[in-house]
Structures are given as structure tokens and as C-alpha cells.
Length: 208
Image (cartoon, rainbow, N blue to C red):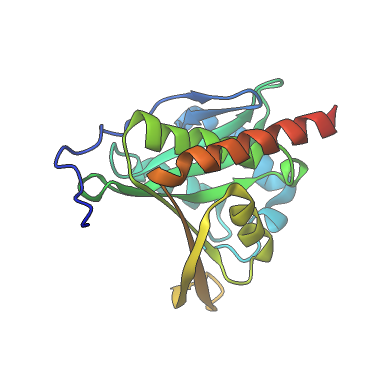
């Protein structure tokens, strides 16, 4: 049997605050520059290792601001709920309403928050918004083929590894980047969401 896509497009994706138990995602605004710049100044070399973002945070921030548009690029600032501390950034982008697909990416966090509750809750908030609120069918993620930590994190989220695009991007230092793609489909979301919630609970218990 052939699966036919619904003719009605999903809801428009617009800037909105997404709140979880541990993090809050705020639509990027000029007022966030100082806090984010401090995060990058503290650990920039570790944050942007093997990244296509480049060495200039100001240029990156300005580009993110300029890209903001409903159903196109929705950059978010990640903040810790308990302290309001700036944690990093993430984004919904490459949004295609007609095909019900989008990508989560441009994600970076201060190293103090690596390996904890931040990334799984951010992904849960973004995917829940895409699947349950807006009605999308596919959420895509990609990472550098050399970034084994990021690939492992995507697998832990419950995403399916689809394959690799060779020489997909040129990095700021002139090297080629091979990109590994992952995805989650709407029909898989309930299982992925259950896994994310269980993982968040386990991480929360471990942190005390």
C-alpha cells in the first residue's frame, strides 16, 4: 500500500519559548548577545572544535539574527531553568512545510553541561514541538563524521543513522567535512519520546 502525505500543510513554525524541567529555549534576540559571548569566551575552542561555525562569535551571532524567519530558521538560546545561566544555542532550520520536514542543528553548549540533562531535554522540547504542535513528519540531524561523541548522542536520542554525505562542507580551515545524517519520523516519536523521558529521569536521579 502506498502512503499518501496529507494535503494540509503543518502549522507555521514561529518563535516561541519552549520550557522544560531543566532548560528553557528562548527565541534568539539581541539582548542575548552578551550572555552567549561570555559562554564562548570561556570555552570557545572546545565548543567549536571541528565546527563549520568559524572563529568569530560576533559574525555567527549576526548571521543567526539575520536568518530568523518563521518556517525557515528559528534559532533558540538555551538557558538553565534553575539559575537562568546561559548554556548555549540550538536551532530549527531547513524547514520545508510542504514536505513536513525540518532539521535540528547549530547546537552547542558550554562543556559544563555536556553529558547531562541539557541535550536530551533540548531535543525532546524541539521534537515535541515539531511533531505534536506543528504536525511535522520528519526531523533530521547531522554531524561531522569525525565527531563520534555527537553521533553517539544522536543514537542515544533514538534517531536512526541514515548514511554519510562525503565532502559535504568546507570548514573554515579549508578541510572537507563528511556529514553523517540521522532522523526521527512521526511514527517513531512515541517510542523515541519514551526513551528520552526515561533517560532524563535516570540522569536527574544520578545528579541527585
